[in-house]
Length: 107
Image 1: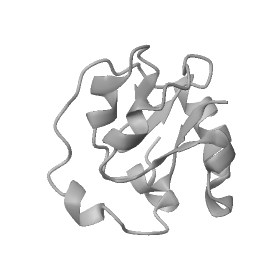
Image 2: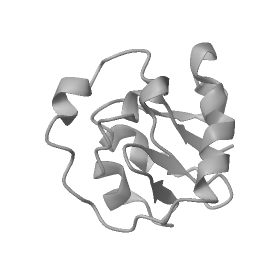
Image 3: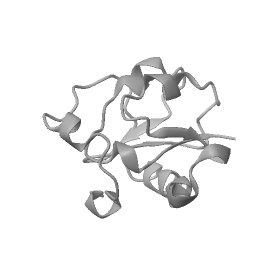
Image 4: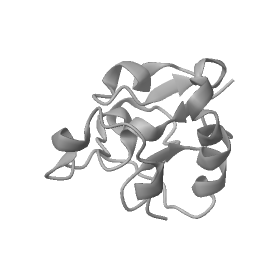
């Protein structure tokens, strides 16, 4: 099992999770983070650190977010690894909790 970043991260892109990841499995896109399923060691540390509550165990991803399992795997191939915490976008708090943001995902 691996962990998956879901829709809540889009346009929030808090990187608190990156600080606690022992294996550098996070990859960064323009307005979203993803977890590399081949690198994730299922340590659970990132889940509690995510202010947007966007990270789930693969088996616990909500039904309406299941497409993010494949999306995380796909985007890790194109996006660079993120190894250090960065500041969140200036408007991240405004986007936190907003639903139906998939169409805003920038690749």
